[in-house]
Image (cartoon, rainbow, N blue to C red; front, side, top):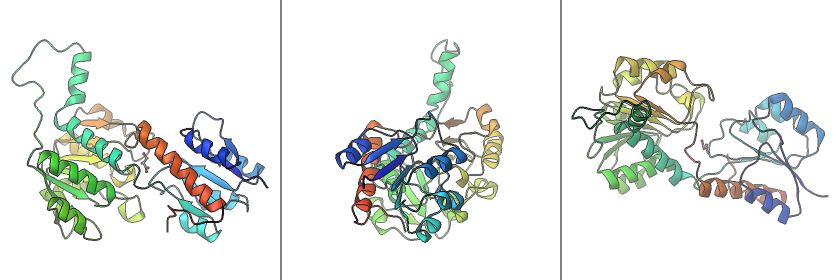
Length: 324
Ligand code: DGY
C-alpha cells in the first residue's frame, strides 16, 4: 500500500522530493497559515495517514493524538523543540516522535549573538532614529551602547545551542562564561573555561549578558521571573531564543521600563504570536518573529531531517532523531 504523509504546512521542497523518491503520497496543507485544532482533526480523520510532519505551532496534545488514525506511526516535528507534542501520549499509542537537533545549532547561536550585538550597540534604535528623520549629524552622546568584550556571559541552560553561543562569545569577544544547567558540561568548560554555578541565581547575578537556552517544560515555565530579573545587574542584557513562556513577559517589561536591567533581545514570546503590548512601547528591547533558525541552509537541512525520520520509521527502522 502506498504510504501517506500529511504535512501541516509547506516546508522547504527537499522533504517532499525525498518522499516522492520513495513513492510515498504526500499531502501538504493548502492553508496559508497554521491549521486550527478543528481543521487539523478533520484532515487527520479523513485519510489513514502513516506519518504527520508537524510544526512547533501545531498543538499536538493528548486530544489531538487520540484523534489521529491508528495508521499514524510517526509525528516528525520540524523543530528542535517539541513542547507542542504530548510525547508520553504519542508513545502510549505506539507513535514515534522526532525533532531536528544539531542542524540548527550554529544558526540559532549566530542569531543569539546577532540579537545581543543589536541590543548592546543599539542598532535597531539607530535604524528607527534615521527612518524617523532624526539624524542631523554625528554627536558625542548619541545612542551610546555598551561593549561586551571581556564581560561575563551567564548561560541559563548549557546544552548544544548554549554551548555554541558560549564558544562564539568567548573566542570572538573574550567573554568569560558562567553557567547553570541540571548537569555539569565538561566539554563546555574545556571549550571556554566556563565556570559551573550551583544555581540559576548564581549565574544570573554575575552575568553582564544572560542568555536563555532551556527547553520549555513545567519546571522552566517563568524560570526568568520578577525575582530572577531582580538579581540581574542594572547594566545587564537578557537574550531569549529558547521558548517564550520561559520568561515572564510582564515582569520583563516592568524591569526594562524601570531600568533595573539594561535591555533585552527576544526571538520568542510568551503568548506567541502575540507580544505583550508594553514591550513594544520600550526602546531597550529588540523583538524578532521567531527567526533564530531561519536561514535557507538550515531550514532545508531541517526539512531533510524530518523526511529522513519519517522514511526510516515507515521502512521499519528506528528514527535517528526519536525523542524519549
Ligand atoms: C526550534 O527548532 O525549536 C526553533 O524554535 C525553530 O526555529
